[in-house]
Length: 566
Image (cartoon, rainbow, N blue to C red; front, side, top):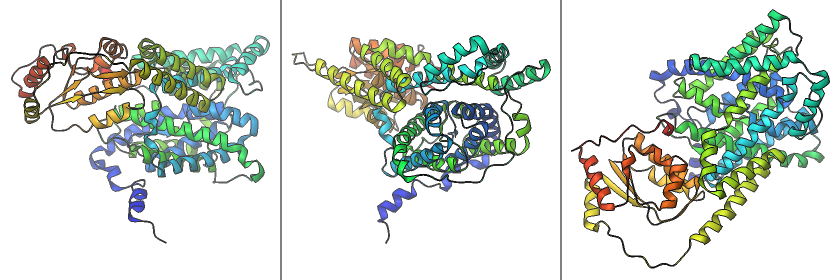
């Protein structure tokens, strides 16, 4: 039996190909250096996430190596770095507490298969239907949980029993009143101080590694009595699958779905962020799911845990000069060298130091300007963010996403109903059709955005405008836009930033006053090259567009795109 030609072509597009390493001859040195840099950054994080999960430091290190390598080769992003993440620990901590370490292997493999199937079904673009406030809400909730997970280690007490992170943190704080370690708390403070101050001295310094080295050295010099990582294996474990009672296998489907959902969302979100940081091919969302799915099948078999694309490590990779997958591969190989040659040194790292690293990581996960923008946008979007964050902390990520999307949908539909009205308005003066046709020959194009631009439509809008080519000026006509929410405004800002980066001037004509306020509040208008590129009159916008397109004049008010565009 042979597959139809279309199916074979579809499957082939998910597999590695030669174009993955285009330009490697000129970029390999930069890729190698970037890989070594991100490997240094990933080491303390991998150890810390493994310990926090309850599987041990070796599991975190194995995950960074195996999942990082598989996702680098098979994933859909050229610069994505994958491995253990704080978000994944939020799902795995209660799983390990309830079912033990063997459950992680089973859940990870099932979750990986779910993600592979999702890639084959071409579900990668469904991330577009998760509203921006929902993503920011569960990110905020995850950050709070990661912070609370570090309370026992930071206070130098054993982790109390329990599945709710907040309750466990409170119990740990009460235990610390009698049995706490002031030395552990001092080490956390030292790590936080180094991680905050080091980047101010030089941006390229590996702050987390320096902080861990400083804390470990302090323990040795002063002779502090604190818990350390302990012995690590000096080789990678062989793959194995634990014996599983098929009768209880069905009970792992729910946790596996949660892991799969998180692996997909966080990886696609990280890949999307990477697209905005590097000039190069955009990621393939379906292939990214395929690579992450394979990584999550393979990693648990080697004693690791489920993994996702890591936004912070990916950002470090790009800033260090990575341009191809070689950088992510080198990152994994660098960690292999740590296992083979440096396991004795790693064993001396205090647990409190890793807790300090994750405290800072949790704080940096919260994009304060994004939270502020959503809170200032509309009451509905602010409510979605708050409800999603609360559901993440109280329940779990799957419930949080479900609740967040449901609330956003209800509020968006209510907004559509409220804005539907019948009113007699004078017909505005518009550009003559023949004149509008002539604009195309001047490399000017005008788009009229009608109806609603909210979370369900924003990705389609982005995809359409991102195809603009052979154009010098784009005029976006907004008077007929009926509905705009924070996600739609954010998407509009992204496309403006993208066009301006491509040296295509963007002019906006006539948003409604309430829409203009929203665009300002979320920072979308900051991406315009000039504050004078917002017009109330179409004729004036066209005249200004012709000035830019002809190159006959220079607008002294123009400035480079805002750094936020990057």
